[in-house]
Length: 308
Image (cartoon, rainbow, N blue to C red; front, side, top):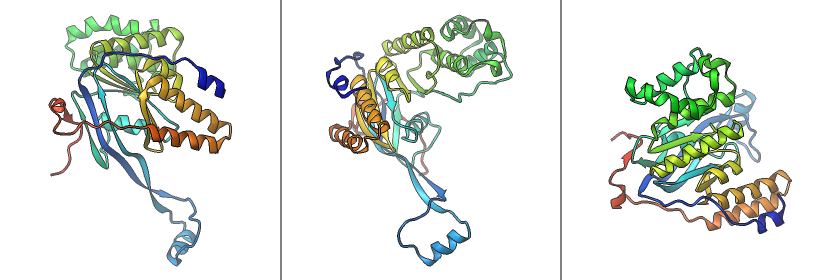
């Protein structure tokens, strides 16, 4: 990507009518206390020097997600971009109720359907058996399962391989089957963590159409991806995270391109320019928060229970 390309590219992107808030993330932080063997530079105490000689590691705080706030609405497809370790997956796991935040809260109008790269499917069973189990686990009756299977198989597009054990599948085939099962119920809130990173053009088109259908049904989709182009093509809005901090939140096309331009400069060793782009993005961020007294949050339920 050249600077001229970045400046002159036509503005475009997906635009959809928006409904009521479905997910509210308020002042969310996830911090971990972990051991580190990293050497401490500068003056050290006698105790620290003794601990180092004994091979003891010091304890450091990792801010996986740090003071993140935003609101997502019905009809939106929200991409989440950022380098490895930026907090993307942690954010989705908190939204799914799989992790408890250090502070802040997540409110949602329904229990999100979470689709991750390690979504639980049984490798010894066939794809078809996993489809049946997955649909039953989603609360469908045996009759509803029978009715839903043809649609799931068409969306997955793995052909006769559906009758073979999951352990024989490529990562792309497994990802497509996971997506097809999770999207079968047209969930109100769908969280996708890197699960669409693999697949051919046909499967990508099918996935895009299903996500569009969920949006048209007034659902909300969150998609984590390392590939900014995927976010540009499949999302209406994007959030850029960097070291746990929200850098930018805006239209998917604009946000993804800003992230790609920063990443390109960083990869080329243009560190100073990349830092400038990061600061420029921070300066334009305007976080949106739905307050507890806002009547639009009446349907929201907390994703986490805290001790009283």
